[in-house]
Each structure stands twice: as C-alpha cells, then as structure tokens.
Image (cartoon, rainbow, N blue to C red; front, side, top):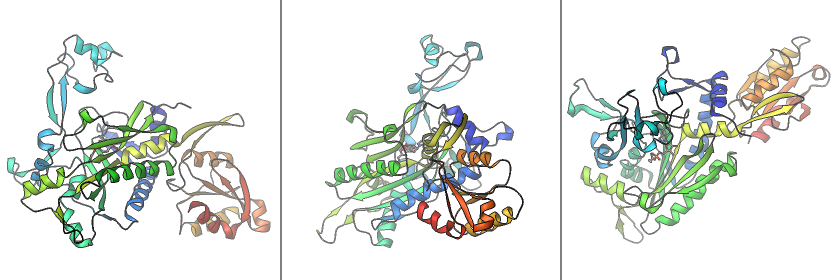
Length: 442
Ligand code: GAP
C-alpha cells in the first residue's frame, strides 16, 4: 500500500500527534509541537532507546547542557565547516540549497510546478555561498562578539567533552559508551517532509570508546545492533537498508560510515548514522582545551586516545518513521478501517475501555476497571457513540487492546478483550484483565 505524507500529516494533526509550532500565528517554519498522543509516542521511543543503551553494563547516560563553551564548536570544526551551499533566486528571492536543487521547486507563483533547476539553467540564481547552520545567540547581557554562543547542532559534543568526567566517576573501562538524548538545532536552508528535516529536533546519540585497532569490530557490532533495534520495534524489514558512505565521500574525521535508511513516501532517507570517528574528536578537544584526554589501560599499561564509534539517530525522524510504517488502510465489512499497527511498547494508549451502553450499571463497572488499570497502563475511557466507532477511533491511534463491558458482564463478571490487528475478541474474567495485559504488553 502506498500512502502519501499528507495522509500522515493530516492524521497526526487530527488525532493530536503533531501540530505546527505557533500555528495560530501562521506557524514557524521547521518547528513542530507534539500533542497529547505524540508526546506519549515520542517518550516511548526515547524510553526504548534509553533502555536498549543504558540497561547494559558498558554504557552510561548523561544529559549535557544545550549551550556549550564556544571553543567546543571551533574544536569540532562546526564553526568552519558546518555549512551548506546556498543560492538565491534573483527574480523571486527564494533560497535554495545548491546541492539539493534536483528536488526543489521554483518559489515563484507565476511559474507554478516548475523545477528550481530550470531557473538555475536560465541563470536566475546567484553564485553559491556557504551558510553556517548553527543558531547563534548571546550569553549574558552584552550582545557582542565575545558573548556569542551556539545552540548545539548535535548532542555528540556534550559527550566528548565529558569523556573524562564519566570515565572517572563511573569507573568504566574501555570499551564503554556514553548515551544521551536531547534537542539539537540546525538552521536548515530548506526544511522539508514534515519531521524529516526540521530546525529544532531531538537526537539519540551514543559514543562508544574503543581501543584503536578494535574499532572496525565495534563498528560492525553497532551497525547490526542498531538495525535490529528498529526491526524489533516493528519496522518492516523490506523498508530498511544500510547505505554505506563511499570512501571518497567520508567526512574528514571518519574512517567508515553507514546510514540506516528507510523508504519513505518521498524516497529513501537516513534515519540513523553509524560512524567510526577515529580519535579525531578527543584529539581536537585535547588540543583546543589543553587537557590530556588519554586513556590508560591498567592491564596492558598502554596509554592511548580512544577511537569512537558513534550511533546517531533522530528521535523526531524515528517518530515519523514509526508513524508512517504503522499506517494501514483496510476494508472491513465494506468500510475503510485506518489502523496504526504500532509496536505495543510504542503505542501511546495501551487499552481502551468501553461500556457497551450507558445504562444498567455498565458505565460504573467500566469506570472502576479504568481507575484500576490506570495504576499500570495508559488507559482511555470512551462511552461516546456506537462501539464499532469507538474501536475505529482506537485503531486509528494504535491502541493494541479494547475492553468492553456488556450485559454478560452483569451476569458473570466477564468482559470482551479485542486485539487491534486481528480484531479477534475473547472473553475473560474482569479480575484477570491486568494479568492479561501485563502478559501481552511485556
Ligand atoms: N553526531 C552526528 C550527527 O549529528 P547527522 O547525520 O548530522 O550526524 C544524525 O545526524 C541524525 O539526526 C540523522 O540520522 C537524523 O535522524 C537526525 N537529524 C539530523 N538533521 C536533522 C534535521 N534537520 N531534522 C530532523 N532530524 C535530523
């Protein structure tokens, strides 16, 4: 089934997953707000990632500040090199990334539907110039050169500069990793494709510090681990692929790099990068800060600057990927059913509770079940409209189970539990609902 991005954007807004930032003021380009269901889905994704990373012996977590010492960005190369080539159309004044003109459309309403590349061929564009993607601001009350700081364009640098702090406080030994989830900001020239390329987004990054010489072994290890994470959370295998960076296209610090790509409605796109960053980052920070960032191996008595294997995923981009991948339209008894077949661990609501009718004591029983289950699960109580419609409403947001209290409940204290994907229903004792859900959802 092929779906359009518009379908997903529309569902996301209608059901409270994602809203345009500052919508009542006409929106702010490249920024999005997560609504009541969106924040649950996003938190569930981040929790799964955090557990996969830090519920193991060899990885510690941190949460570094978004604002960092400006020298960090000189050392990392971002001040000099974190740029995209930009061109302006002399006629309509639209701005484009010079290296992405194939996909771009002309901004002039007079040439509706025209490709921007055509305008370039006709000489309407300025010469490309480099545009730095970091957002600048000032620290303290004086707005001068000395007070310039940047909103971090990646979370990774907060990890590199804390390497020694974490090493010394956690007593880890190499190989070990540091994981972090947090906001990153890039002043992208053109934002596009909903959450795919935005100006404010969240990253889930892990830097794994290894002995030089063992780096490629760990690169292969993390490549597989990260692909399995997406597959185990339900993404369709055939929609995923590895895309290695050719040697001549590697970043200057990288020895090897591979992207995990997903086939979006607009084509294949990167959702995570796995990079062998060599000892570039620690060497640079050591040179710029004057602090020794070596590792001393007690057993072999060797001293070295560790190599780093980085896994760098976008939380926001993963969010969009899980949403798109889970979206299905099916025909059920002559009617269209929209269902999000989200992995149960990611589903924003775990169970819907319905009284079949609003009388005969059914709402009271259903409300008691709701109150009781809320101690353990995110539950949604719904007594509005036909029960078939209530199922559909939960299907559309990916709720894996729905419990209905009906007239039989009044006689034998059993309820029906309906499973989202198969739509099969079983009857169970209402005192066993929690046990059933725990068993299924774990
Ligand atoms: N520390 C390495 C790094 O930041 P990257 O390939 O620039 O590498 C890693 O970014 C991930 O962050 C991407 O795979 C993507 O998921 C996410 N990402 C990057 N730029 C983004 C943007 N403008 N909007 C949304 N997500 C973005």
